[in-house]
Length: 203
Image (cartoon, rainbow, N blue to C red):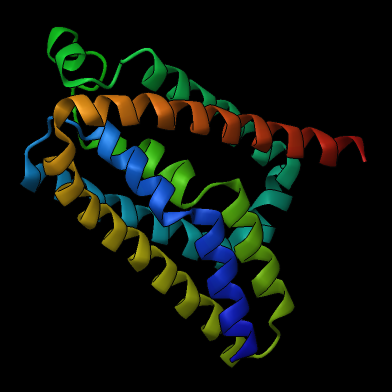
C-alpha cells in the first residue's frame, strides 16, 4: 500500500491534472463539446498507453537506442516550449484556426501532442514510471504502480471534463486570457525540463 500511495502521489503531481486541464481548455477553445470530449478521451488513452509501454519496455528501449533520460527531458522541453510560444501568440485561438487551416487541420492532433505527449506522459512521468517499476521486484508491487498510473490518468480525464463547465462560465474571452497565462506557465515548465536535462548531462 505504501508503494501504491507513493506512485499515485508522484505521478499525479508530475502530471498536474489541473494544469493540464487548463491547457486543454485553452487548446479546445471554440471546439464543439462532443469533439472536445473525444479529444480528452483520446489524450488519456494515448498518454496511459505511452506510460504503460515505458513501464514495460522503457529501460530496454532507451538503452537500445542509446538515449539517456536527460536527453529525453531536453527534447520534451523543446517541444513544450514550441506549444507555449504558439499559445502566447494566439495560434490556438479559434479565429486563428479558422483563418489558417494549417495550424491544426485535424483538431484531434492536439489529443496526441501536446496533451498526451508530453503533458500526460512527458519525460518526468516516464522517468518516474521507469524508476518505480525498477524498484518493484515482485509482480504485485508492479501491479500497484500500474493501478496508480491508471488512477492518475483518470483524475486528469475528470479534470478535463470538469473544465468544460468552466469554459461556459468564462466564455471565449476568459479562455483566451487563460490560454496566455497557461502559455507563460507552460514555457516555464519547458525551460525547467531543459534545465533538468542539461544539469543531468553535466553532472
